[in-house]
Length: 331
Image (tube, rainbow, N blue to C red; front, side, top):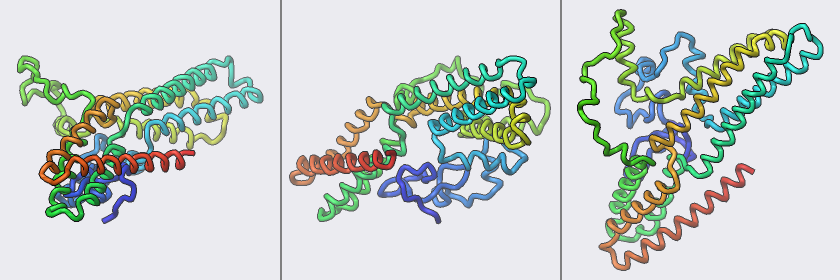
């Protein structure tokens, strides 16, 4: 079974092991490897998990292809493509003025460039104060590794580390910026009956498909919608035989640019709301919870205060090294 090398790899299985998160690669279309999925994954099962059942294979594969692309990169590439289209429109207007009764299409594209640039800037600014769950998971694993080193000579050290790892993993998984969402109680008056269909759809196959979608755990995800928009833009662009033909499709492409920008912004907002992106306040709360876990598990050991302090010291050194490596990688 294939394994990841980077703890923050988006393809990493979300399943838990005694020493932390699983290192196997997840199966396409789901969040777990075959072992943690508890079943053998086949094509039919993967199709059932998808939000959109698309006839074209290249369309079905698009979400998988884009898995490693974060939203910032999506906006960056979209802005670059939008500027390229402006460039083509401008250059063609000099040689084929008959194609441009006015410059409204260029103006529209430039307004879209403004929207994309603004969304990209806002997203980067937001991410400077937010940390994704994969990065937090990597920090948790580093702490567990330090605990393993510190407790190697302690009786039952492995069992203690296993419990620490399990609790830290659970704390990270359940961490959210909106803890009230976990405890809020909705009055029964606001709840629909369990069998309420809301929409009375006559076609039986549509009824079944609607039921499948309604029960899909990924229903709120916008990843496949983003992938579809990328695919539409690619198709229009690649089917153009010349710059002239491409420019004739500029307004249609621009419409997809605008939808893509709105989807990425909403996807980021959703990730923050549901806790896949954690605020500084949430991370501090999570840090306090990790400290509590360490104290609870180690307080029976002689000099446990020094052990806990040393674990944090070593972990912080590790965090600084990871940050330094990341700066070098991005430079």
